[in-house]
Length: 541
Ligand code: N01
Image (cartoon, rainbow, N blue to C red; front, side, top):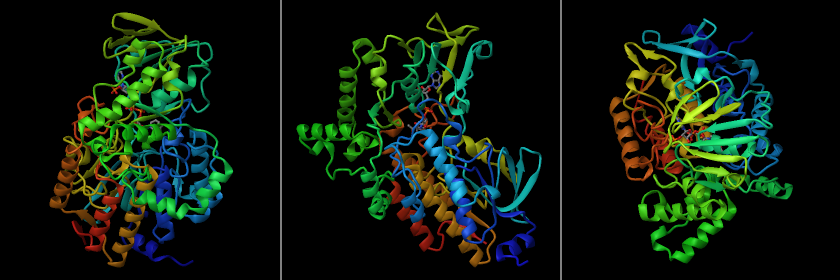
């Protein structure tokens, strides 16, 4: 049998693979497919028992993407995008999981994925320029490169509530909801947390449960999805124009073309502003806040958008006291991820739904029977915790990544430092897909994933062509980029919220705005410029 150049290289360096990929979500799967096509040997380790990442784990009732399917889907294969038919405007979790499984089958990916195996640590061997990757089954593999396709919202945040273990009812996390589902009919149910996961769960289960008590610490801004079936003629039109649509997405700030207006909100007459928000509200989705660029920069413009949503809440929720409690007032709109809903506010008009304001009445402890908040014990059969994730860095810092005497989790104690959100100085040959310091969570993740996977894949081919074995950012390039990320973030209203973008939801985590706020298109210009300039800012040897 013939060995490929990649295999010969692997043998020389005594490695098992050229690249180990961590995670079989959309980024890990595309990364495997791409490297295979370039003759680079790669293997994926995945903690779950199947592909899908986010959409494998988050199976709570009502789980659905907040980006429209025709944008939240791969563009790298024209046949794939022509042949796949989305059934709804916003795909629900089961359809997204089916899509992920289709990707695995279509490109025959499973033969190079080990499931049910977590990467527990990895150590850089400077002499051989190889990573030793330690796996949860006790084995180790050696690989020249490691690509962390570990996701940005993949490490659940499980608050250590007093007495949690005493609770004798059923306890679930949205981030690891039972695959077989849960029968909630007629039960007394609590949901803790009112971010996207909480909102979707609350809206979906309210009609089914006996009573539903929502524990809200901070209200979210929610904009209607106006979800529904995707008519075949609309999908046909999208397919005919896919090149144009994808190009517009890539040229945008958010990885979805939300058609921003060229003027600032403050330059536009109030009636015209109102008409623009009406149009965006009626259209639905995250594009609501993308109309005017100053909404994220100017507190006055921001408050116009925020007040528009608060007015909608007051119009929808019949009890004015509940409406006020549901109205966010402590942070600028869009400085926390907005939620996309289907009847969330209406849910609070139901007789079986009540709201506990955890800000006024903090959760003191769990008991055998339920939750004590503000001195009152509330009894439940089921508690669902929708308490979020250690976002952007959690999956990476919990993996025990060491190089010599340096460990990534220690290096990032005061916030992540990366070059372009792709690599960290001191940790050669370790790439991150949509890492902190890249636009990632501020964009359509698929747009960002495709760009990063393509960037990394090209870099590995370029290294092979140069007969190089090692790539690492210069410390000064990383410092410079980290300043750019922080300074740009500080120019906006984003750092004013206690958001997971800031790490504020994790006790003790350094508060620092982690994603690059300059937008996808600007980021691509920089990252392409770096390559054109011979991988400027990277030491290659
Ligand atoms: O998590 P979150 P999520 N006591 O962090 C509360 C994406 N996503 O899983 O705001 C009481 O937003 C916490 O309160 P506070 C999307 O990007 C997308 O919902 O910190 N409450 C908050 O209300 C999203 O932004 C989709 O004061 C506590 C909630 O728990 C991201 O994932 C669907 C608490 C956590 O909200 C994360 O969303 C789902 C405590 N000790 C997720 N600790 C779609 O595509 C936390 N909370 C639609």
